Structures are given as structure tokens and as C-alpha cells.
Length: 568
Image: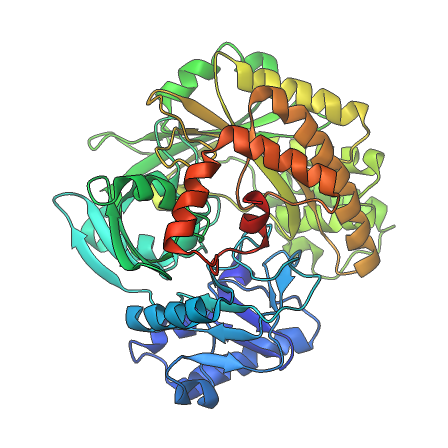
């Protein structure tokens, strides 16, 4: 996660990168343009040393040439942007970093007139490269252009009475959370990580967990967008309401979102309890827990009988929060890491890397998987020591909500997540059958398979969209880590993951499940792509979406291959 927060963009042709933190402070005078260029060079050293550089909180370091042009563009042969897990990339001809909304408007007019693509990306953390340009991300060059809102990152207004905040959409979620603390406010929920731009996290339909809390797009009260054909538009439940329902989770295709007002909540503390249980222990309690706990997350460990259950409830203002009532984890790091380290020493034949005792569990898991990531029996052994690690990690944490929500989701990975409506204990049946299917097909399923819940969204293009205000959705993500930089092995993992993906797509269909927009992968096979399109047409009002897109962006300059394929 630190790497994702520290590194902004990789432009491989000239090995220039920027630290996101430096660029976000540049306009405020905290860092000069010369030191911004130093940030470029310092982070570029990672790339020169062969370390993967991710496009996180992506901001272009404004070169002298870029400063000289009002369009804030860096024009070279091509730039290359890589998402944080290095699974997708794009090579736009032009890359723009507007500093004002007027510059965004001028760029859109220019590209609308030329009828050329201009994609607006977020922080580059989407597993499928949702924000990238290019017909086939990572596989073909393109003369298409890319821009980022990274320098449009101001907090514009805080309404403490309504508990609402208005921001420019380039602000990073983690930075917004930090600044809201001064007002005694916080966001209703966040995703597992908080390195996204606010605009990106809304447009992609991202979510946290909590059966009473909607995905983040549904927390938008009002938004401003710049469109190629109609210019600036204000959207809310009372202004352009039909477009508002579509554009809240608009995939970046219905306009460039420049400003949003988010509904927040008072800052509060959470009491988090982590335990390891079996499915039989969960079943009689599950529906009660969904109501009782503000946040609930299950982390299923494939090929074991164990589920890591993470429950969070809001602390009452006068409630004593001492360790006697809520005992923290009782075991030391050395005790918790004993089983993973023992397995690592066995597999490395007593020749570990010198710093292995300093590794976190997630890094140790990567190192263990790296030894044989696609061998089912090996993965079972790794999952078993993960079970033991979590069993020794049971206990409580008490802290402010933005310190509790989310978790370290590990290293580079391939992931597919789906959302489906809950009824009874359907989501538990889903998991029980999925784990059996994984075993039957000998899939080397890495851990964990994460399961979360949200309320419905009123955004028509959200995977959790529903007209029923009481509908709850479950979100389930499967994963294969990419624990090595070796190209041949990464390719083999990706090929196996696509087989896993195909199985999961087949399995989920009877449950009415739909892919998370940031995790949908278009297969190479035309027939398989048609199957996905047909499923999306059943789930979403695509005719409405396409009509709105034709009105605000008739040449579809803002859409990339993912959106164009969906609308084909």
C-alpha cells in the first residue's frame, strides 16, 4: 500500500515519474516545480532499478515544455502508464494535466471537434485499467489522449450542519479523510484501500462493507460534469435527475466529473472484533450480524474450514473503551508468524533471505506463493499457515472509523469481484458451493476470498443498483497473486486466472451476479465477449446509458475500449 501511495505515474519512454504527494502540494506552494522534477528523478530511480512503478494518484510532473503550453500537455512519441498491479497499461500519444475547470472544458471542445479520444483517468488502481485509454490496454499503441484531474484536488466547501463536503474530484480519498477530521466528519465508508481519487472511486462504483451503507457513488448529493457537447452541467436529484442517476456511476463516459458534494457522517470510533470461525458457526448468526454490525467482512480461506470474521460496531459516546472490555490481540508478532516462517524455512531449505524476520504476513505470503504459485497442493499449505496466523490474531481494535475500515490486501494481484442481491442465507450458499467448485476444478485459489455487503445504490449503472430500498447486496472477490516479476511465471498465472475467471462467470450467473466495473475483463474470444454484453444488457438500462452518452458525447471521445465494448 505504501508503494501505491508513494508512486504516481510511470512514463517509460523517458523514465519519468512523480510522487503523488509532491504534486498534490505543488499548487499550494509547498513544493516548487524544480523539486517536482526532483521527485520525478528520485522515483524514476525505482524504475531504472527494475522495480515496477504504478500509476497511483497519477499526476504529471509538469516539464518546462508542458509549463509553456496552456493545454498542460506532455507530447512525445508515446507515454506508458501501468496500473498498480502491473497487469494493464496504455500508451497515449498525449497526456494532459489540467489545473482549472476551464482547461478541462477547452480540452473537451478541442477533442470533440477533432472527434478523437480523450479518456479521463483516476488514480490508476483499477485492476482492469478502467481509466486507461487504448483499444486493447497494454497490447496496442494508440494516438488517443489521456488526462488526469490530479491537480484539481481542492476541498471547496464543508457544511458541518448538513455533514456534506464539496471537493474537486482529483483529491485522494485518504487525504480527504485526514482533512475531514478537523471538522469532526468522515466519509460513510471507504474501499479496502484509500489511494483512489474521489472522482474515480465514484465513477467505478467502488464500495466498502456494511449492509446499511450504499456504495460510494450513492453518497453523491450533487456533481458537476464537463461534457463534450453540452459543456458544464450540474446534476442532482432535482437538476437533470435522469442523467444524475446514470452519471453517478458513469464509468467516465458521460462527462468529466470535476466537482462532487458527498454526504458524510460524524466522525466516530469503531470497535472491531476479529475471530476465526467455521461456516456452521456463522450460519445461525449471519442475518443478525448484518443488522447488528455497521461493518461486516468475511475472509474465506480456500481449502480450509476457516473464515476470518471481522465485525465492527460503532462505539457509543459514553462507552468505556478499555482493553479489559475489548482485549487486543494477545500474541506477539513472532508467535503469530511462527507457522509461516517455519514453512518458509522448510521450503527454502534453511537458506532464507536475510531480512525475512522483518516481513509482514502479506509479504511472507507472497514469498511463499512465489515458490510455486499454481500448484494446488503448495497453495493448500500456504493457506493452512494463513489460517494459523489469523487464529493467533484474534482480538479487538478500537480506533476512529477511517483507521479501522480497510485492510492490507497484499501485493500485486489479479482479482475478479461480483455483486448479487441477497435473500435469506443465499450468500452463504454461494460461498459454500463456490469453494466446492474451486476444489472440483483443482484451482490453486489464493487466500482470502473476500466477502462484503452493501445497501442498494440508486445509481442505475451500479452493480448494486436496485429500486428496492431494503435490498442488500453481497460482493465476493476471488484472487490470484502475482508474487514475482518473472514474465513467464506472471503470464502463466494470468492464463490460469482467466480460466478461474471463466469458471466464476459461469458459476455466478444463476445468482444474478454482476462484475465490479473496475474488475471486469473482456476476453479475447468474440463469443465470450458477446456473453458478457448480453448479461450486462439484462442487468443495466444500457439503452438509457447509450442515449445519454450520445447526447453529451456524440463522438464517444470519453469512452475507452471497456465502455465501447459494452455499448457495441
